[in-house]
Image (cartoon, rainbow, N blue to C red; front, top):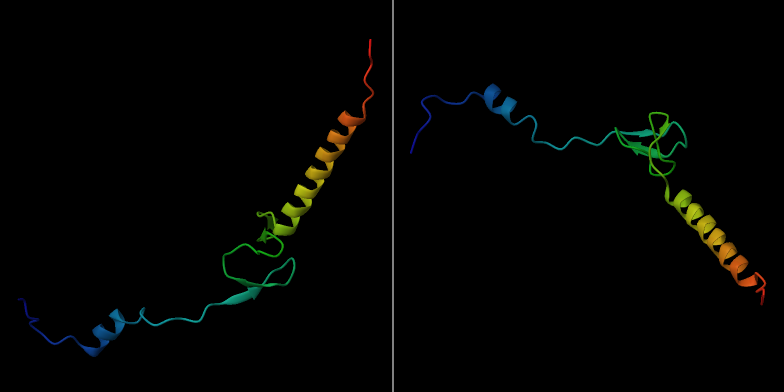
Length: 87
């Protein structure tokens, strides 16, 4: 088994191990809704990233689904209420 020829200096050892400790995560505030936000991530509250809308939020998806259901129910009610011509 190979054995080191020279002692590893403290400087070299410490430089190699400098990246091993855990750094605290940096947080900032969303520019659109002021929610806490991790760096380089889109806001889950409003869906904005760097001032642009990139995600649809859960509330927006729910509103879209509700409007689609109402439209579908209206179409179903309109087809049921059409009078039948016996000609």
